[in-house]
Amino acid sequence: MTGVLRPGHAQLRVLDLEEGINHYGKVLGLVETGRDSQGRVYFKAWDERDHHSLILREADSAGIDFFGFKVADQATLDKLDRDLQAYGLKTERIPAGDLLETGERVRFEVPSGHLIELYWEKADYGNDDTYTNPPPWTAEAEHGIAPIRLDHCLLYGPDIEKVQDIFIKVLGFYLVERVIMEDGETDLAIWLSCSIKAHDIAFVRHAEPGKLHHVSFLLESWEKVLRAADIMSMNKVSIDIGPTRHGITRGTTIYAFDPSGNRFETFCGGYQCYPDWKPVSWTWDEVGTGIFYHDRKLNERFLSVVT
Image 1 (cartoon, rainbow, N blue to C red):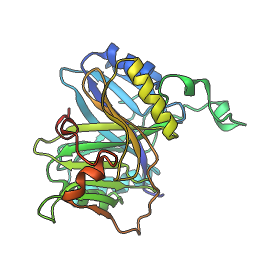
Image 2 (cartoon, rainbow, N blue to C red):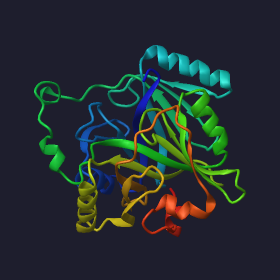
Image 3 (tube, rainbow, N blue to C red):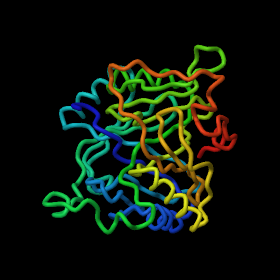
Image 4 (cartoon, helix red, strand yellow):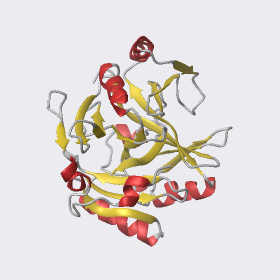
């Protein structure tokens, strides 16, 4: 892992900031790490070491502002900036300090209409318990659903074959799985990885650009997924579907909505994969099984509701 390391942060728009803080802080159980002069609120999962992985800002419409990836070092950031420009994309350098405890970022828009960022510096929010004789979990791990990290996101927009080309040829990702449309050739959806995870980002073909399907948070076990379902119901969270299993990635999952209508996922499992593996394809006649392995059929709301 010498280039893009992992998903680093997502900035979400919420309609009511206090409702968002309550949901992500108390129900999901993320740790608040700061607030900035723009009114944004920052969170991390209990087992994450960087200062934040989720940023909330209040807005008139829900959705995602940008999704960021951490890269190995300054040289990698500079090289990827040059490579993106050579590919034909316009990049923007956002100065250090624009996000709390975060260094300079390189931002660019992909053909699906989404803003993607790269950065390499973010303050370490660990403590002595993290690095010296650490316990297996902290008190924060018992607060709310308590995921261990931001895992991935699924974005909806057009021209996903062009997006795939950028992520593979420029950023060094590889295609893990795909869903093929009725014509037997065109991809409806793609799952891309920069690691040995089954996916670090995914895209679904959609007419409207720049849409969010979900942001996903990782849990450690199927039992924790079931516990998350209990906590959601106890707090009257609107559940989309689950607990269930995906055929694609093999992960176990619950999809639900925050108070603003942004869909989020609590996710566990998924296989490990490697760049030399041949991508897995799901045909149109089995797309229901691919998405929801137990039900073997699609939930219309799952397909159509995005922010």
